[in-house]
Length: 192
Image 1 (tube, one colour):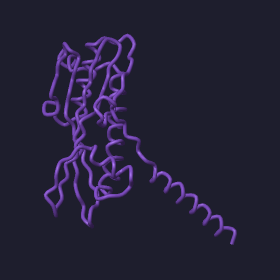
Image 2 (cartoon, helix red, strand yellow):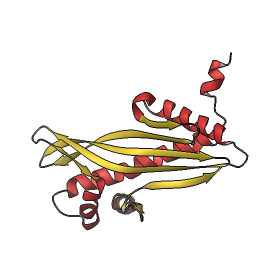
Image 3 (cartoon, helix red, strand yellow):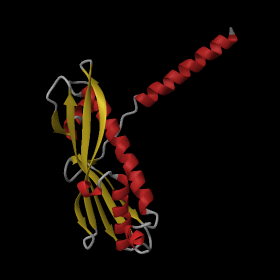
């Protein structure tokens, strides 16, 4: 009997912990100047030149995205700026059917001697469903439904918003790790 009670208590505690994790709300960063979602940060990298940081950022783009040529919109070494378009995808359930979505964003990396700034912004969501035409909307259209936990777009928002946050945090961590290491470099492979 004691064993069954202990198992029941352990099960209740496990379910309670799972429910708390599942109900954790994502806090989405809003840029005060644009009133739009933007994940950005300035990182100090003492003693590293602008050119080296540029090479690291460029190498990260090449290694992270399938085709850096298709992703990159601006690649200006003199200005120390790289801007690219990225996308990630997922699926949510709506009206007993799966709906595919593509989360599109812009990533800007600006470098200076000893520091760089990255910004993920301009998020849009494209939906594709077998039973409807689908569409394209700003991520901002999903935020009120996510915050209120109700409405016609809530089933989408409760999947898309956490997906966005998780994916951008993963990419940010990957970029920060790459920017802290010497580039194995696009140049060094050519110098043989």
